[in-house]
Structures are given as structure tokens and as C-alpha cells.
Image 1: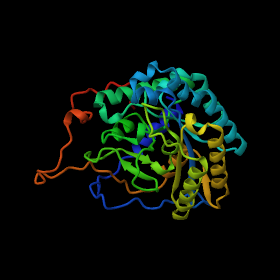
Image 2: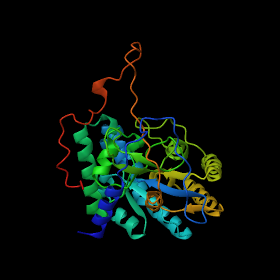
Image 3: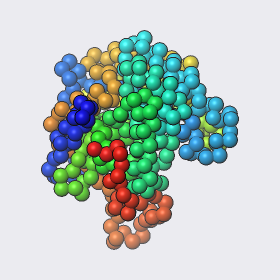
Image 4: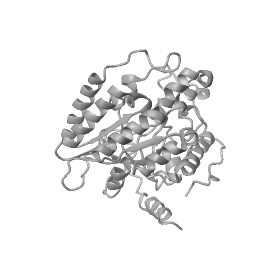
Length: 347
């Protein structure tokens, strides 16, 4: 058994806590203790969506050469520029990679890993996860794991959902596969220990490293006619100003500045200049620890944090006038008959 396997199983053993207070949604995550000398943390993360996001949002994009070329800019041009920028500042970053991107650009993924950066899981085809059944979601996770292993020989410890849309069953699927952390939820700026299945008597947990739409370059720059975006492409100086203000605020509160970029967007020259300026401002803050999400999650894992849950809402039957979700419009719930126990990637 490899040391990596030992580490994953140790994580699972110490990740079981008494099931207490998981239904209380009024208790926020508390500030955490950072390593000595630091009072906040920051990470640059890159979602290497490439063609996958266009193909999942508009399958007809597979026949649009111009749209496909727009997305291939990320791995072909954006990633080398980003790696050079990170090297200049001797900073390691986290790259969330869909399995399809790894299959299509294996040499790019190897280059990222060879440069010392973290490779994390970002679905297979950037699928909208809320439309998947439990079995489809499990298969998607496993296919993505296979692709990352084939491309760069890595077994990721972290996951980020496409468009940050987790299903309530997703954390347990991740825990079953030995993931250390997720980075998809938005209820705080402080990392916390997330209960994977609030209904379990001794639930597994994951480390949650929260995100925010305001710290994503997608909202600033993303546009392909007929596929995504509203046609407003912001000035990089405006984006930098907004991100800098949030950086200073999160640092003041002792939280995690978890910034997301997409190489097909922020790999463009003026936008990369803005991102490099942002990185310089992160490094200049007294007491901000800048590292990968994996390193941050491993630190949080050492802390004695009370696990928290994000309970699934239920509308009372007495509110008979309230609109109910269409059961055909979302993935089926756990226990829908799909056999999830046969995955080769489960611990």
C-alpha cells in the first residue's frame, strides 16, 4: 500500500465526528488559526475549462470552430503565460482541471504538475451537476479521476463543482473517494469542516474552502455569442479594483482570499497584467499566507474544528402555495437505485 493510500485512509478515520448540531443553520463558521506569523490566507486558483464548458453549455458548439478556438486559447496560450507569471513570483497555485481537458491536452496538464502546482478535480465535461442522477455523478467523478491519473499521474485531493453547483449528496461521494477538500460553497470566508452526510450517525467530513462570485474572472470577462455571457466585457482595471478591495477586507477579517481565474479569460495580456498586480498585492500584505488550496486544506485539517452542515431546505407542507421543484428537472436523490459501491476509485 502506498503512503498516499495510507494518508487517505488516515484522513477518513479521523474525519468521523459525533453528529451534533448539524441542523442548526444559524451558527456561522468561525475564524481559524493560521500558521505562526500569518493572520489570513490567499490562493490563486485556475479553472482550466477550455472546450469542456462550451460543450456542456451548448452541445452545438462542437461544430463552431471559432468558439472552440476561443476556448483552446486557455491551454495553448494562457497556461504557459500563467506558469511564467507564477514562476516569476515563486508562487504555487491550484489548477482545477476537467477530465476532458486532461484527455485533450495531457502535455499541458503534465507541464502544470511538473512546475510544482496542484492539480485538482473539476468534473469531466464541466457538466451541470444538478441535472445528473447519483449514478451519473459517481461515474463523472470516476472518469475525471481516471483522466487526471492518465495525463499527469496525479490523484487529486480537492474538488470544485462546475459553476460551484454541488448536489447535497456530492460531499459524501467525494468523501467515499478519499477527497480532502471541496471548494464550491459560499456561506463564509472562513474555511471549515463540512459534514458530508448530515443524516449519518457518524458522518464523514471534508474541509470546505469557500468561494465567491465576486472573486471570479468569469463575471468580468466571459462572453461567446450564443453560449455564455451577456456581452459586457469589463476593463481589467475595474476588475482589479474590485478584487483588491475584497482582498484587503478578507485579510482584515482573517479569512481565505480564494480567487478564481480561467486561462482562456485571464490569460489575455492586459488581464494577466491585472492578475499579476493582484498577486503582488497579496504578497505585499503583512501576514497573508499565499499557497495552494491543498496546503491550506491540510493545515485546516489539523485544527480541532466543530463540523458544520449545510442542511437541505424543505418547504413545509402548510405553505401549500409555495412553488415546488419539478422532480424531473434535477438529479435523483441518493438511494435512487444507482449502485455507487463498485467504483474503482472508492476507498
